[in-house]
Length: 154
Image: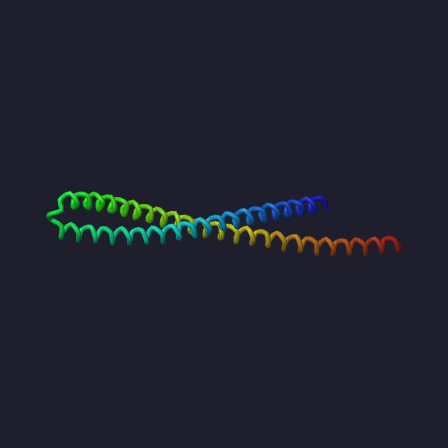
C-alpha cells in the first residue's frame, strides 16, 4: 500500500516535473519563434539594403563610364562603390549567418517537440498504470471486505 502511494507520489512528481519541462520548452520555443521573426524582418531589411546598394553600384559604374573627364569624381565614386560592395558582402554574410541560425533553431524546435511528445507518452503510460493499479486496489479491497464478512459470519 505504501509502495503504491510512493509510486503514485513519484508519478505525480514526475508528471509535475514533466509539465514544468513542457512549459519551459514551450517558452523557449516561443522565444525562438520571436527570434526567427526578428531575424526574418532583419533579413528583409538587409535584402532591401542589398537592392539599394546594387542599384547604387550600377549607377556609380554608369557614371564612371560617362565621366572620363571627371577623374576626381570617378575616384570618389569608385571608393563609394567599393564601400557599397563591402557592405553588400557583409550583408550577404549576415544573411547567411541568419539563415544558419534559423535552420539551427528549427532543428532545435523539432528536437524539443519530439522530446515533449516522448515525455507526454511516458506520462500517459504512467497514468494508465496508475489507473490499473487503482482498479486492482479496489478489487483487492472488495475481496478483502468479502473475506472479512465471511470470517465474521463464521
